[in-house]
Amino acid sequence: MKVKMKLELKDEPGTLIKALLPISKYGGNIVYVVHDREKKLPNGNITVQISIEANKDQVREIKNALEDEDIGILSIDEVKLIEDLAFIMIGHIVDTDIKDTIDRVDNTGFAEVIDLNLKMPNIKKESSARIIIRATGKEEMKKCVDLINKIANEKDFVLIYPLMLETQNERD
Amino acid sequence: MKEIKISIIGFGSIGKGLVREIIEKRDFLLRKGYDLKVVAIADKNSSEIDINGLDLANVLKKEEYSYNKTALDIIYEVKQDIMVECTPSNIIDGNPGLSHILAALNSRINVVTSNKGPFVVAYDKIIESADKNNVSIGYEATVGGAIPIINLIKSNIRADKILSIKGILNGTCNYILTRMQKEMLDYEEALFEAKELGIAETDESYDVKGIDTASKLVILANSLMKMNVKYTDVKVEGITRITREALELAEEIDCTIKLIGEVNKEERLLRVAPRLVPFNHPLSVGGTLNVIMLNTDIAGEITITGRGAGPKETSSAILSDIINIADERL
Image (cartoon, rainbow over all chains, first blue to last red; front, top):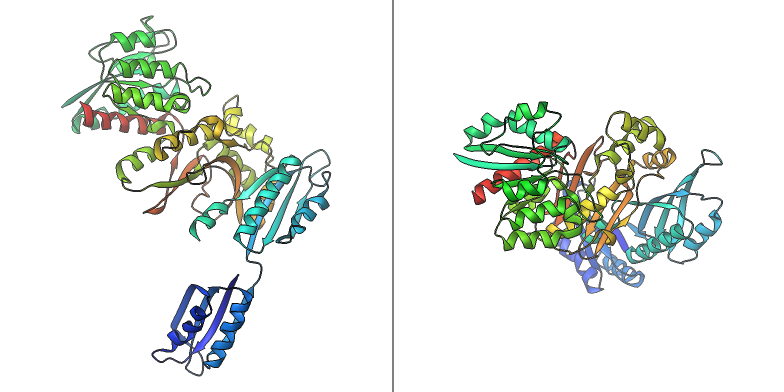
């Protein structure tokens, strides 16, 4: 999982490396480090934002090690569910059992429908829905996209994917 | 001064548009050292021929042509450097364009064309024939109208591998979706308006069902990414079921819906489908514009946008190909 940490460091040589060492020691993978020396805290210290990929145990160990080193942890934004994607579906969304559509995503265990917006202009016309799906990671989201595709095929929905589907995967 | 003798096979809107640009650009091209002469034009059943160069303004005025020689007669009998093939596209068997192109190449005549059909059904065969006969084939006008995508990659992106291409390759679909979003029109209303304005053809199915976009995708995949694919390899979904409400739902999350053609080499993915495109994304261009985004291994993303259709825009691509061939071969 991805974890964003905001740390407080003294503006002295060597403090950044002190903050990074525990991360590599416990197997965390640093995604980015933003070291902003322009913005100082009222006490003269500076902040550094670090995004790492690590599992829960590793995060706990890293946190303890940082505290042992007297490095202030301003925040840990532990993002459990990291992939959100919006899709639009067009078809007979309600008549084809909307609850089944949602349940099948929720029952995967790694993804859930976190938002659904439905527009039904009139009974004869096809309705349109926007669903936002949250998955626990990229691979999980890929599986979820396959599932949604399958549901759309079964229920004869037009599925409008987000453009960035593949680009995101290519870049990361 | 280089003399370039061309024939124009297929004298509909594209062929006539080309002749208008040739008249317009005559002095400009002469100053650059190119004396472009149209020695023959051929319509379905009739033709005009003058081996010293036709009086083009006069040809445009005519409703009937003087000779009953066919396209193939002209290819075989009239001495020319380049045959410009502008007959209507047919993606089932590529004809009549394919037979014209192969006849010309096998007669050692260079070819420039705007016709997608032959390239969708027989890309390899055409390229092999050109190579075997040591002549050139220019097909920039088959994809993206005035956007120089093929020549851009062939001439200027030389060491990169093209990983993926995605874009809006059909102006009619883009116009319809743009109008649906801007004016909150239903699909049928926007289509009607597009037909009234001459942006959509009387039979719109080729455009709105995604067939045109898929054909262009096949050409890009084969010619720029060496993928060796056929039309039937493309997953195609058009825009006919897109609703006004879907566009509203997209707009609420700062997106629009565009018909995107996408090819990805590693995933062997070829798809034409309506997609959610953020308003601030480079592919979010409106009206009848086309746009193409490449992703290459060295350069990363490159986006190029411009007018995708119309006789004048297509002429830009055809003339570029003609001059390129003149530089290389004549």
